[in-house]
Image (cartoon, rainbow, N blue to C red; front, side, top):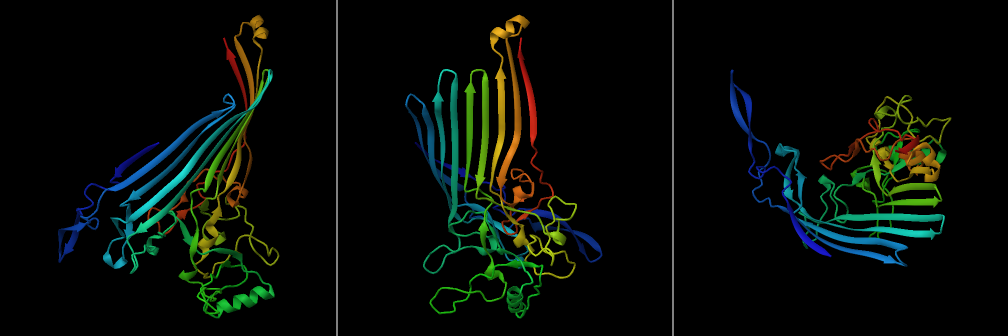
Length: 402
């Protein structure tokens, strides 16, 4: 058990004073030198502080046939330092402030089991599990009663992680059935330009039709009110499983790993920026002959500004990392040829993987190059352009001891 408090400045040492930068200007017909504040001064800025409590337990039962560790933790961060978005008329993008409080809490478990222990055969298993919950507890903005309010401009929401994906919810592609055409007409009557083959998003419940205080219907308008928290790029939990089987001179091992609950942002549909016939993702494009196509049909005209809704992908995956089979030649066989040790190994890397869209497209879900959230927290940036495929490899090994 342990508790400690740490401090973090995490900003430039002179950012509180608003340092000046030297800039040339044209003054009449001659050049002049002026000075411009690099950042907005904030003399009230304080250190960010984090208090963390850790609890740990090591255990072993049945002569350590079952053993492991359990670790729990909770950390509370106060005076959190983050860039707060400022109005464009200020001339600055943002201002670093102590914006509020966050909390992280989680558990890590490791379990090792000696399942079978015989003279010539042994089977052991190692399990690992980790989960973490991050949430914003308090922000600068508060209502009249002192209750913390969300800061929408920064995409910060009470009870959610600092970095979240906030956008329209994907509802697929508009089709050309009578029912869909009738529904589409209601949106177009309000100024939209939907037609079969274009992206469709969820019209969130923003209208209270029966006046009971609960919104129960959409308004056939896609506006900022229809944007919701879609998820985060952090997994809900991760886990690993290792099995080892030993029979005389033979040993078979396998390792699998899972990361569940995260979301990736990236991959633009057809003409919107990256999924072309020669691209990294197969073009399953909607058409009248392919009404179940995943991507909207190619077009060059004006479209609704909702294309990003299709770029949020399920990043969950379970991968069998490796399977290895080895054989160690008995020592009494080696004395005749003057060797002390000889072992042969056959290994396959990444033989199986299961998961969401990222996996189905053949991309590597662990290569997060450009699959992340911008530092501004306002507009997620990312793409598949630099993402790699997952390579399956076969390896043969020979170890000789002289």
